[in-house]
Image 1 (cartoon, rainbow, N blue to C red):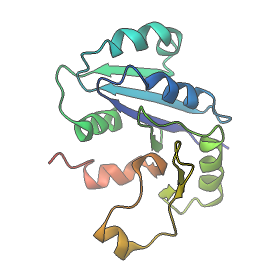
Image 2 (cartoon, one colour; image 1 turned 90 degrees about the vertical axis):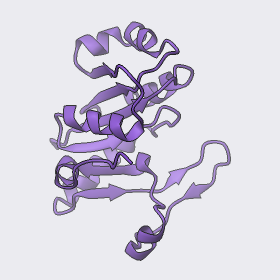
Image 3 (cartoon, rainbow, N blue to C red; image 1 turned 90 degrees about the horizontal axis):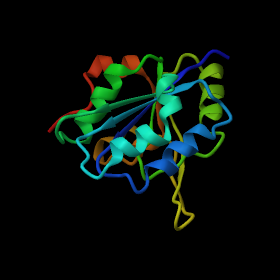
Length: 169
């Protein structure tokens, strides 16, 4: 299976929780990925923290770390990450979330078995309450309210090229 992921992580002043998110990614059973961290102008020492702890991963290009000169918002940061992505399949990981160890392996398997699809999503388990959110896809409901969390979507990068990325308004 030759399915590669680019994981986009936008961050702003999240030094206190970013390590848990990154470590959950590096604990994946499926390791064919790159992590792109777009620091949206953090002032809390996030840059030095990441560059110190993950120095080897940055040197091996497993992590791309880009710091924006000023805070421009999460949508802008995500779009910058998408521009740098080298892999066909995109996933997002917010700094206050964690991935189950089989997250990427499960998606890679679904992608392999369903090559005609360009986007996938799953349910999400809330860490504190243990509640599971998500249900079968309903286009009309999606038009009324976006019930799909960004952190459980995996999509073909060409979809975002077609629509031009995240809206900045």
